[in-house]
Amino acid sequence: MPDILPLFPLSLVVFPGETLKLHIFEPRYQQLIKDCWPGKKKMFGIPPVLEQEMANVATLVEVASVDEEFPGGESNVTIKAYSRFHIAQFFPVSPNKLYPGGTGKTFPKEERIDSERILNLQDEILDLMLQLFDALGIMNNVVEAPTEITGFRVGHHVGMSLAQEVELLAMTNELSRLNFIYDHIVNILPVVRETERLKTRAQLNGHYKNVVPPNY
Image (cartoon, rainbow, N blue to C red; front, side, top):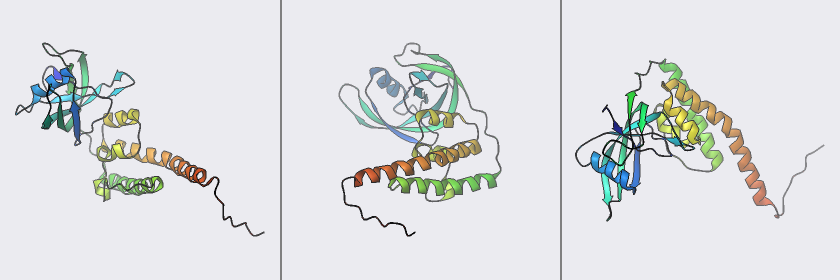
């Protein structure tokens, strides 16, 4: 990792393995993209910003493609995310540049986890996700098999807040991430079901109701 790495703080979380499309319009980040493209394969970091505070964990990314360029320097780009790192020191402006920068260190290698525990959680999370999507009345083909369930793959699709996604990004092993997602869905599923039930009742107000009374 370079001594000072270009940084592109955003109010979102980018998980390793994710592909992200961005519209680049600020001059400082136009410069960052030019410094990392074309053909340079220079990496930069995207740290999440939560309530005006930048997290000390970031995702290492590169420009996969510049998809469209506009007069004035704006562009549409595709970003590919790889790994995470801790930000040790932040500079609002990198030396001789317009954009921020920082120093950091990579995450330690993840500890090995009992695969049977992972598989059981994957099965349970897939079932919970299907229940959640059904309660919301949406079609979502994020994953089709339990083995496709990973914390980073489904993290954006289970209704977590930005703060929760930052917490997920910082976790040091897959079992912790899956347990976090499992607990989150278990907690929100009853709330979602009750909210949808109340919405249905509200939509029925003013309509004639065919109510079957109980037998006593």
